[in-house]
Amino acid sequence: MLVDRMHLQYRQNLRHWSQWVPVITLPILVLNALALTLWNLDWIRTLFIILCIADALGGLSGFYYHLCGVGQRVDGYRLQNFLVGPPIILPLMVTALSALGLLAVYWGGIV
Image (cartoon, rainbow, N blue to C red; front, side):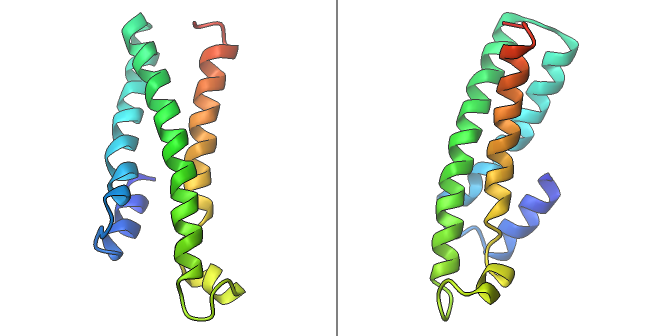
């Protein structure tokens, strides 16, 4: 997913600062999740929860930016622009994965 994120953001030359959010935060979240599976420490868990909340909010804002990006293309919100424009599903996927991470932490009885 990281390679896909970097490729898609690189195509747009990282024009807006918010395009760096998934490129920087997702690898940190993955490393933190791996550390949490190896060492179940309180500070790692707290950092994981903070990162999941931040990535979920970043995914929602990314959905907004991607949806606006589709509308800025020629002819606006037509099916063709949804196919060739910025992928609106990818930021929602980041939000869903972050929400699943939070669900795993709170429902799994880890907290």
